[in-house]
Length: 383
Image 1 (cartoon, one colour):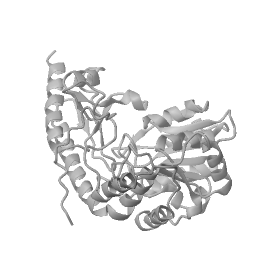
Image 2 (tube, one colour):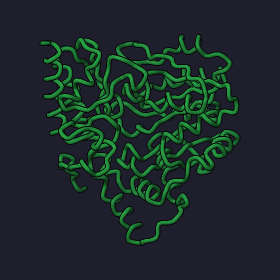
Image 3 (cartoon, one colour):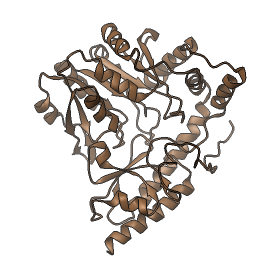
């Protein structure tokens, strides 16, 4: 197995990078969720092969990709699925929007637990649905779904619950017990359960195991839309390849019909990169997880040394969720940017008092970011 140098410095400025070209020169962009690492060699080879061939036309989904994906779900996540259940999309956000749109009742509401990945909030409003947001609550020092409040807020107009697991931004990997409770809730109220599981192969706690909620029982499987993608795991988000797993024939037909003409099929670049990732990049992925877990340990330790900041260990994702409520200012994220660190405030996700920091970058960037964060806190405290 070739060793991957994840410390290799890569200058992404002035490359049309959504992440790196957002801020002025000198600001470390640790905000949006893509990684600052080169993709695995088999992915590079697959992409180069298309370019060398020289014809880039409309693409079909390779049968081998579907076979590899089905096998992966069985072996890694203990969920037996069928190729016929798959609907391919050019990204996770089109998947969320399509899921929201395929609810036939135009007066319907969509429930989710907040704070949450921003497109969850936008999916409801973007399709003229009403959002029913239920804040997470605390139990045993963890963020958990508030099922008591969910019951109170779940009227007959609620037709869907949107889950993010592993959760973005709080980093939870929900337990079997929690997912069974959610499954029971959705079955009781006849809700479609749309589950975004894009971070399922990015676990920071080796004792955790990702469980696809639809795999728990046939009833919830039959009213589920599960969204998965290689994009976060293998750092190919810019290519756009997502798959919706929809076992129910009628629901899948509605989803596919709503998608038609709005969300195009993935390109051959996306398809062959996904195939290479799933079939040939496991060594790369294993080393990536080791590197990310060490970055997680570093950020966790250093943030908790800074007076006024606190962070809990993540179970999944490479996105630190950092509490700044005790710093003493509401515009802390703005001050961080002035001192050269670009992160996202909790308000983006429907929360407050936290910021999200992407630690999927070279360790040297994190060392510098910690210096700048500490400086910013000290400036506020000494003002």
